[in-house]
Image 1 (cartoon, rainbow, N blue to C red):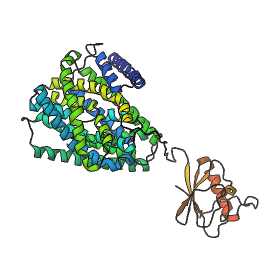
Image 2 (image 1 turned 120 degrees about the vertical axis):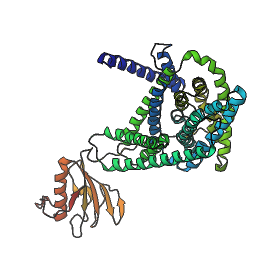
Image 3 (image 1 turned 180 degrees about the horizontal axis):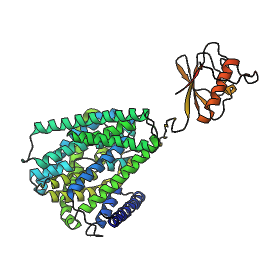
Image 4 (image 1 turned 45 degrees about the horizontal axis):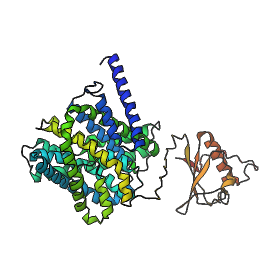
Length: 507
């Protein structure tokens, strides 16, 4: 690529990005799901619109899978474990048994109502059986719903991509209409177990590393956090396991650890997720041929209605029976099964494998996602209100930030008051430490105490102080002086000159 070609490419990419951001703002104002306008931007920019050619399905598959990894890492980072920890079992059942039920019911509808071959019907059912994490995260988090309900739908959408991808790969490569059940379940178990284990382990490793390694710039913490999630995705994929579940679980572990600069990390991850969504949907819009979509409208409506009105409710009802989820919430979960990027990306797998009728399946899925996202997304608030699920007392959570002391250019000082020290009996305000030095915590008889200005120090206390490099030496001198001569040390000529054996250490 020459330099002039690079400029043209960046100009086109920047223009498309800005147009997509403007589309997202418009979609938010009118209540439409953003993905529809992103797809529209791609179609308008395509060969039948502005003439931008893109028909490399294999490249679309690779870029789409990478974008899904970023989206799932962002979803895990922004999911609170407290909301989903008790929902792992029902979410797991929905993501496995629910997917299988949905595939069978949807495939049966496509076989009997559209006359498709079983191989094509099963492939189509597998592709559309997964709820989309990007669509779910973006829509549900704007609704004041009970945390348990939101957490269940989010966890399901994070878990069910892996089983769906496995089924699509199986149906794309099998030579018979119905694959053998034993190898199918063995493959599923291996991918979920190994992918999940790698995701959790790499997430824990990342959390420990980021808490104990001081990075030279604040902006490196978000990069490193997302980098661990991408590493989990790639590591799982490299050993033949599910990178999708690894990416989500690593993000979940990292997002719920006490990491430095969590607010900045969350903002960066959300930006990266938006960029991945925009690039993904615009690319998928470029990939389709609008002139072929009209023939897919009727099949898409049939399959979509079977999925929305039969397959999804049946799978939710049967899978949630053991968990005593109220029927109102089950109805909402059924309606909230949004489809988005995942099904369209999955259609590239059979196209790459040159499966018969794969291009027709791509067009059907594209139309189905567009039509039923337009139907379900804007109606979710009304459905939630009609079912009486909207929380009128919903509050926004505060954001708490943790920053390493070296980034603040500060030192943590520890002071232990020995028996006989003149610090015993001195109030905190009488220390008169040079500002901005502050006593942040006192450990007394194994318990922690947050001091105020009138708190009186005692022998045996361990003090934690924060001081800047410019005031640290003066603070140490003042503490030594009082320890030797009491709070009138300065009047008595004691200035805390260091001795070989000091009581102040820094950490």
